[in-house]
Length: 152
Image (cartoon, rainbow, N blue to C red; front, side, top):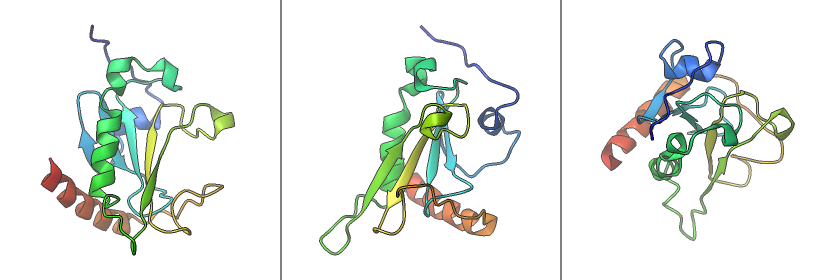
């Protein structure tokens, strides 16, 4: 059974999904929208957002979550985290927080794909967001898009 999409007119992610706020889109399906985080923890930090407005994971119908992990896997590969070797230890985090107390900043379920290319970058204790640099985001966007297109 298909559940109609729910939106909140005041929600920043709902506005991004509807195209009211610009984003560096990476992947879009019937059920989700993925784009670069504008305050990345590290280069390539991406968000995956269901097209159903709900504050916590349990608020989202299953069908709107069906593309999340396949999308996270595609993004991880496009970000180069599948190139690990003895001289190139690479990892990544898939992060999803529920509620302010759990460090959720936007009350719309979303998943972070965060590359971990070395011990000093990526997810660490705390949240070391970088300042917004739209020119650099544009460059990163182009690079990831070319890799995504090669994998699609």
